[in-house]
Amino acid sequence: MQKAIVLEFGKVHYLDIVNKLSLVCAVRQITLRQLRAVLAVNRLGKINLAARELGLTPSAVTLQIQQAEAELESALFDRTRDGFRATTAGLAVIAAAQAIDARLNQLADELIGVRESGRGILRFGAVSTAKYFAPALAAAFMAEFPGIEVRLRIGNRAAIVTDLAERNVDVALMGRPPWQVAVQSFLIGEHPLVIIAAPGHPLTADRHISKRRIAGETFLVREHGSGTRSSLELFFADVPGRTDRLGPEFGSNESIKQAVMAGLGVAFISAHTIATEVELGRLVILDVTDTPVRRQWFTVNLLDRSSSPAMAAFGDFVSRRGAEFLPAVARA
Image (cartoon, rainbow, N blue to C red; front, side, top):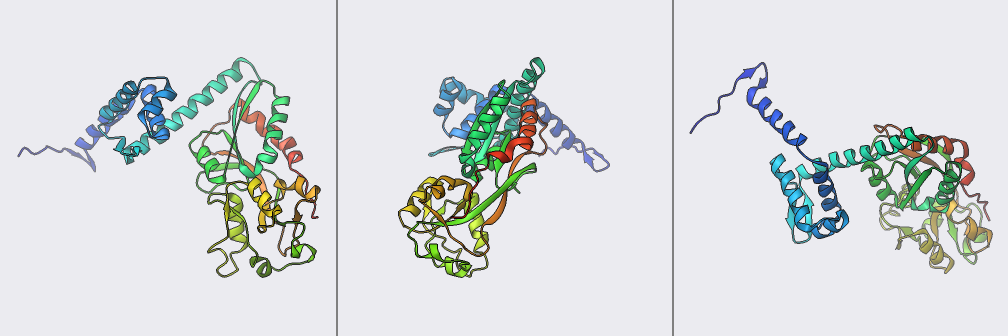
Protein backbone atom coordinates (compact mmCIF):
# COMPACT_ATOMS: atom_id res chain seq x y z
CA MET A 1 0.00 0.00 0.00
CA GLN A 2 1.49 3.33 -1.07
CA LYS A 3 1.84 5.83 1.73
CA ALA A 4 1.36 9.56 1.32
CA ILE A 5 4.45 11.62 2.02
CA VAL A 6 3.74 14.35 4.56
CA LEU A 7 6.10 17.31 4.92
CA GLU A 8 5.70 19.13 8.22
CA PHE A 9 6.40 22.84 8.56
CA GLY A 10 6.13 23.55 12.28
CA LYS A 11 2.63 22.28 13.04
CA VAL A 12 1.21 22.75 9.55
CA HIS A 13 1.09 19.71 7.27
CA TYR A 14 1.80 20.15 3.56
CA LEU A 15 -1.16 17.97 2.57
CA ASP A 16 -3.46 20.03 4.80
CA ILE A 17 -2.36 23.16 2.96
CA VAL A 18 -2.88 21.53 -0.43
CA ASN A 19 -6.34 20.26 0.54
CA LYS A 20 -7.40 23.64 1.87
CA LEU A 21 -6.19 25.46 -1.23
CA SER A 22 -8.02 22.92 -3.39
CA LEU A 23 -11.26 23.48 -1.47
CA VAL A 24 -10.89 27.26 -1.67
CA CYS A 25 -10.49 26.98 -5.44
CA ALA A 26 -13.54 24.71 -5.64
CA VAL A 27 -15.68 27.13 -3.61
CA ARG A 28 -14.70 29.98 -5.90
CA GLN A 29 -15.97 28.00 -8.89
CA ILE A 30 -19.52 27.93 -7.50
CA THR A 31 -21.84 30.18 -9.50
CA LEU A 32 -24.71 32.39 -8.37
CA ARG A 33 -27.10 30.24 -10.40
CA GLN A 34 -25.99 27.17 -8.49
CA LEU A 35 -26.41 28.96 -5.16
CA ARG A 36 -29.90 30.15 -6.12
CA ALA A 37 -30.79 26.57 -7.06
CA VAL A 38 -29.50 25.34 -3.69
CA LEU A 39 -31.56 27.96 -1.82
CA ALA A 40 -34.73 27.20 -3.77
CA VAL A 41 -34.43 23.43 -3.31
CA ASN A 42 -33.73 23.85 0.39
CA ARG A 43 -36.72 26.16 0.89
CA LEU A 44 -39.21 24.18 -1.19
CA GLY A 45 -37.89 20.65 -0.76
CA LYS A 46 -38.73 19.59 -4.32
CA ILE A 47 -36.87 19.97 -7.62
CA ASN A 48 -40.04 20.67 -9.61
CA LEU A 49 -41.18 23.40 -7.18
CA ALA A 50 -37.72 25.00 -7.23
CA ALA A 51 -37.70 24.85 -11.04
CA ARG A 52 -41.07 26.59 -11.22
CA GLU A 53 -39.91 29.36 -8.87
CA LEU A 54 -36.64 29.87 -10.79
CA GLY A 55 -38.25 29.70 -14.23
CA LEU A 56 -36.12 26.70 -15.22
CA THR A 57 -36.72 23.08 -16.15
CA PRO A 58 -36.38 20.43 -13.43
CA SER A 59 -33.42 18.92 -15.29
CA ALA A 60 -31.67 22.31 -15.30
CA VAL A 61 -32.10 22.67 -11.53
CA THR A 62 -30.89 19.10 -11.00
CA LEU A 63 -27.81 19.87 -13.10
CA GLN A 64 -27.05 23.01 -11.06
CA ILE A 65 -27.19 21.00 -7.81
CA GLN A 66 -25.06 18.19 -9.25
CA GLN A 67 -22.44 20.63 -10.54
CA ALA A 68 -22.21 22.34 -7.14
CA GLU A 69 -21.83 18.98 -5.39
CA ALA A 70 -19.16 17.91 -7.89
CA GLU A 71 -17.18 21.12 -7.40
CA LEU A 72 -17.29 20.82 -3.61
CA GLU A 73 -16.94 17.02 -3.58
CA SER A 74 -19.73 16.93 -1.00
CA ALA A 75 -23.38 15.94 -1.05
CA LEU A 76 -25.46 19.01 -0.28
CA PHE A 77 -28.79 17.19 0.07
CA ASP A 78 -30.09 13.83 1.19
CA ARG A 79 -32.69 12.57 -1.29
CA THR A 80 -35.66 11.26 0.74
CA ARG A 81 -39.21 10.23 -0.06
CA ASP A 82 -40.41 13.47 1.50
CA GLY A 83 -38.07 15.62 -0.57
CA PHE A 84 -34.59 17.07 -0.33
CA ARG A 85 -33.04 17.58 3.10
CA ALA A 86 -29.82 19.56 3.52
CA THR A 87 -26.74 17.74 4.76
CA THR A 88 -24.24 19.29 7.15
CA ALA A 89 -22.22 20.49 4.16
CA GLY A 90 -25.44 21.70 2.55
CA LEU A 91 -26.35 23.78 5.59
CA ALA A 92 -22.96 25.50 5.44
CA VAL A 93 -23.43 26.28 1.74
CA ILE A 94 -27.00 27.48 2.35
CA ALA A 95 -25.85 29.88 5.10
CA ALA A 96 -23.22 31.33 2.79
CA ALA A 97 -25.70 31.56 -0.09
CA GLN A 98 -28.19 33.43 2.09
CA ALA A 99 -25.51 35.92 3.13
CA ILE A 100 -24.45 36.43 -0.50
CA ASP A 101 -28.04 36.86 -1.67
CA ALA A 102 -28.76 39.38 1.08
CA ARG A 103 -25.58 41.33 0.28
CA LEU A 104 -26.48 41.48 -3.41
CA ASN A 105 -29.96 42.76 -2.54
CA GLN A 106 -28.38 45.36 -0.30
CA LEU A 107 -25.96 46.32 -3.05
CA ALA A 108 -28.86 46.90 -5.44
CA ASP A 109 -30.52 49.10 -2.81
CA GLU A 110 -27.28 51.02 -2.25
CA LEU A 111 -26.79 51.59 -5.98
CA ILE A 112 -30.35 52.90 -6.27
CA GLY A 113 -29.62 55.20 -3.33
CA VAL A 114 -26.42 56.43 -4.99
CA ARG A 115 -28.17 57.14 -8.30
CA GLU A 116 -31.16 58.82 -6.73
CA SER A 117 -31.29 59.84 -3.10
CA GLY A 118 -34.30 58.66 -1.11
CA ARG A 119 -34.99 55.55 -3.18
CA GLY A 120 -34.70 51.86 -2.39
CA ILE A 121 -36.43 48.81 -0.94
CA LEU A 122 -36.95 47.99 2.74
CA ARG A 123 -37.87 44.44 3.71
CA PHE A 124 -39.70 44.92 7.00
CA GLY A 125 -40.66 42.01 9.26
CA ALA A 126 -43.12 42.32 12.13
CA VAL A 127 -44.37 39.83 14.71
CA SER A 128 -48.07 39.07 14.42
CA THR A 129 -48.95 41.05 17.56
CA ALA A 130 -47.59 44.17 15.82
CA LYS A 131 -49.85 43.76 12.78
CA TYR A 132 -52.33 46.16 14.40
CA PHE A 133 -49.98 49.10 13.94
CA ALA A 134 -47.05 47.99 11.74
CA PRO A 135 -48.96 48.63 8.47
CA ALA A 136 -49.82 52.18 9.58
CA LEU A 137 -46.17 52.77 10.51
CA ALA A 138 -45.04 51.42 7.13
CA ALA A 139 -47.60 53.56 5.28
CA ALA A 140 -46.50 56.71 7.08
CA PHE A 141 -42.86 55.93 6.33
CA MET A 142 -43.61 55.50 2.62
CA ALA A 143 -45.58 58.74 2.62
CA GLU A 144 -42.53 60.55 4.01
CA PHE A 145 -40.13 58.66 1.71
CA PRO A 146 -42.18 57.99 -1.44
CA GLY A 147 -39.17 56.62 -3.29
CA ILE A 148 -38.70 53.73 -0.83
CA GLU A 149 -40.80 50.61 -1.28
CA VAL A 150 -41.65 48.69 1.90
CA ARG A 151 -42.18 44.94 1.67
CA LEU A 152 -43.94 43.92 4.89
CA ARG A 153 -43.79 40.36 6.26
CA ILE A 154 -45.95 39.29 9.23
CA GLY A 155 -45.33 36.13 11.25
CA ASN A 156 -45.00 34.80 14.77
CA ARG A 157 -41.84 35.59 16.70
CA ALA A 158 -40.00 32.40 15.76
CA ALA A 159 -40.67 32.95 12.04
CA ILE A 160 -39.55 36.59 12.12
CA VAL A 161 -36.36 35.74 14.03
CA THR A 162 -35.61 33.10 11.39
CA ASP A 163 -36.27 35.61 8.60
CA LEU A 164 -33.90 38.04 10.28
CA ALA A 165 -31.17 35.42 10.78
CA GLU A 166 -31.50 34.23 7.17
CA ARG A 167 -31.45 37.84 5.94
CA ASN A 168 -34.91 37.63 4.41
CA VAL A 169 -35.80 40.90 6.16
CA ASP A 170 -33.66 44.00 6.68
CA VAL A 171 -35.25 45.14 9.93
CA ALA A 172 -37.77 43.53 12.28
CA LEU A 173 -40.30 44.83 14.78
CA MET A 174 -40.76 42.69 17.90
CA GLY A 175 -41.31 42.73 21.63
CA ARG A 176 -37.76 41.96 22.70
CA PRO A 177 -34.47 41.50 20.84
CA PRO A 178 -33.70 37.85 19.99
CA TRP A 179 -30.85 36.03 21.71
CA GLN A 180 -30.34 33.58 18.84
CA VAL A 181 -28.54 36.09 16.60
CA ALA A 182 -26.35 39.14 17.22
CA VAL A 183 -28.46 42.25 16.62
CA GLN A 184 -28.58 45.93 17.37
CA SER A 185 -31.90 47.14 18.72
CA PHE A 186 -33.72 50.46 18.97
CA LEU A 187 -36.50 51.13 21.47
CA ILE A 188 -39.81 52.40 20.06
CA GLY A 189 -42.04 52.47 23.12
CA GLU A 190 -43.86 50.54 25.81
CA HIS A 191 -45.63 47.25 25.09
CA PRO A 192 -48.11 46.34 27.87
CA LEU A 193 -49.48 42.79 28.18
CA VAL A 194 -52.82 42.33 29.95
CA ILE A 195 -55.35 39.65 30.87
CA ILE A 196 -58.74 39.99 29.20
CA ALA A 197 -62.18 38.45 29.67
CA ALA A 198 -65.68 38.78 28.29
CA PRO A 199 -67.76 41.60 29.88
CA GLY A 200 -69.93 39.06 31.72
CA HIS A 201 -67.06 37.18 33.37
CA PRO A 202 -67.38 36.91 37.20
CA LEU A 203 -63.97 38.48 37.78
CA THR A 204 -64.65 41.71 35.91
CA ALA A 205 -65.92 43.40 39.08
CA ASP A 206 -63.00 42.24 41.24
CA ARG A 207 -59.93 44.29 42.02
CA HIS A 208 -56.37 43.16 42.73
CA ILE A 209 -57.00 39.59 41.57
CA SER A 210 -54.09 37.44 42.74
CA LYS A 211 -51.89 35.54 40.33
CA ARG A 212 -52.86 32.23 41.93
CA ARG A 213 -56.56 33.09 41.59
CA ILE A 214 -56.30 33.95 37.91
CA ALA A 215 -54.15 30.84 37.36
CA GLY A 216 -57.29 28.78 38.04
CA GLU A 217 -59.01 30.18 34.95
CA THR A 218 -58.96 28.57 31.50
CA PHE A 219 -56.41 30.46 29.41
CA LEU A 220 -56.63 30.62 25.63
CA VAL A 221 -53.06 30.79 24.34
CA ARG A 222 -51.03 31.28 21.18
CA GLU A 223 -48.99 28.53 19.53
CA HIS A 224 -45.40 27.61 20.40
CA GLY A 225 -43.01 30.19 18.96
CA SER A 226 -45.25 33.12 19.90
CA GLY A 227 -43.70 35.89 21.97
CA THR A 228 -46.94 36.39 23.90
CA ARG A 229 -46.97 32.72 24.91
CA SER A 230 -43.37 32.99 26.15
CA SER A 231 -44.33 36.03 28.23
CA LEU A 232 -47.27 34.13 29.77
CA GLU A 233 -44.95 31.26 30.68
CA LEU A 234 -42.67 33.74 32.46
CA PHE A 235 -45.67 35.32 34.22
CA PHE A 236 -46.75 31.94 35.64
CA ALA A 237 -43.22 30.67 36.31
CA ASP A 238 -43.69 30.99 40.10
CA VAL A 239 -47.05 29.17 40.11
CA PRO A 240 -46.21 25.45 40.50
CA GLY A 241 -47.43 23.29 37.62
CA ARG A 242 -49.29 26.09 35.81
CA THR A 243 -47.00 26.13 32.78
CA ASP A 244 -47.23 22.35 32.25
CA ARG A 245 -50.39 22.80 30.24
CA LEU A 246 -51.22 26.42 29.59
CA GLY A 247 -54.51 25.92 27.79
CA PRO A 248 -56.15 25.52 24.36
CA GLU A 249 -53.96 26.86 21.54
CA PHE A 250 -55.04 29.31 18.85
CA GLY A 251 -53.15 30.37 15.75
CA SER A 252 -53.91 34.09 15.89
CA ASN A 253 -54.84 36.93 18.23
CA GLU A 254 -58.08 37.42 16.31
CA SER A 255 -59.27 33.88 17.03
CA ILE A 256 -58.33 34.29 20.69
CA LYS A 257 -60.30 37.53 20.97
CA GLN A 258 -63.37 35.94 19.40
CA ALA A 259 -63.10 32.94 21.74
CA VAL A 260 -62.78 35.18 24.81
CA MET A 261 -65.81 37.23 23.71
CA ALA A 262 -67.71 33.94 23.37
CA GLY A 263 -66.92 33.11 27.00
CA LEU A 264 -64.54 30.20 26.37
CA GLY A 265 -61.90 31.54 28.73
CA VAL A 266 -59.54 34.40 29.48
CA ALA A 267 -56.36 35.38 27.65
CA PHE A 268 -52.99 37.02 28.21
CA ILE A 269 -52.54 39.35 25.28
CA SER A 270 -50.92 42.53 24.05
CA ALA A 271 -52.95 45.58 25.00
CA HIS A 272 -52.18 46.93 21.53
CA THR A 273 -54.27 44.17 19.94
CA ILE A 274 -57.48 44.83 21.85
CA ALA A 275 -57.82 48.63 21.87
CA THR A 276 -60.91 48.65 19.64
CA GLU A 277 -62.71 45.82 21.48
CA VAL A 278 -62.13 47.43 24.88
CA GLU A 279 -63.37 50.78 23.61
CA LEU A 280 -66.53 49.14 22.24
CA GLY A 281 -67.13 47.18 25.47
CA ARG A 282 -66.68 43.77 23.86
CA LEU A 283 -63.69 42.87 26.05
CA VAL A 284 -62.62 43.84 29.57
CA ILE A 285 -59.11 44.09 30.98
CA LEU A 286 -59.03 42.30 34.33
CA ASP A 287 -57.39 43.96 37.34
CA VAL A 288 -54.81 41.27 38.06
CA THR A 289 -51.88 41.85 40.40
CA ASP A 290 -48.55 42.42 38.59
CA THR A 291 -50.31 43.38 35.37
CA PRO A 292 -49.99 44.93 32.95
CA VAL A 293 -46.71 43.18 32.31
CA ARG A 294 -44.64 45.96 30.79
CA ARG A 295 -42.47 45.02 27.86
CA GLN A 296 -41.11 47.22 25.08
CA TRP A 297 -41.30 47.37 21.31
CA PHE A 298 -38.01 47.32 19.42
CA THR A 299 -36.81 47.45 15.87
CA VAL A 300 -33.81 45.17 15.35
CA ASN A 301 -31.36 44.41 12.57
CA LEU A 302 -28.32 42.15 12.28
CA LEU A 303 -25.24 43.53 13.98
CA ASP A 304 -22.90 42.45 11.19
CA ARG A 305 -24.95 44.06 8.45
CA SER A 306 -24.10 47.51 7.13
CA SER A 307 -27.03 49.88 6.89
CA SER A 308 -28.52 50.57 3.45
CA PRO A 309 -29.95 54.02 2.61
CA ALA A 310 -33.48 52.64 3.08
CA MET A 311 -32.59 51.16 6.47
CA ALA A 312 -30.98 54.43 7.57
CA ALA A 313 -34.06 56.40 6.54
CA PHE A 314 -36.34 53.94 8.37
CA GLY A 315 -34.20 54.10 11.53
CA ASP A 316 -34.41 57.87 11.54
CA PHE A 317 -38.18 57.78 10.95
CA VAL A 318 -38.81 55.29 13.77
CA SER A 319 -36.69 57.27 16.24
CA ARG A 320 -38.75 60.39 15.47
CA ARG A 321 -42.25 59.02 15.02
CA GLY A 322 -42.39 55.34 15.94
CA ALA A 323 -44.12 55.76 19.32
CA GLU A 324 -47.06 57.68 17.84
CA PHE A 325 -48.31 54.54 16.08
CA LEU A 326 -48.66 52.47 19.26
CA PRO A 327 -52.37 52.13 20.17
CA ALA A 328 -53.43 53.69 23.48
CA VAL A 329 -55.39 51.40 25.81
CA ALA A 330 -56.90 52.29 29.17
CA ARG A 331 -58.12 49.75 31.72
CA ALA A 332 -61.86 49.36 31.32
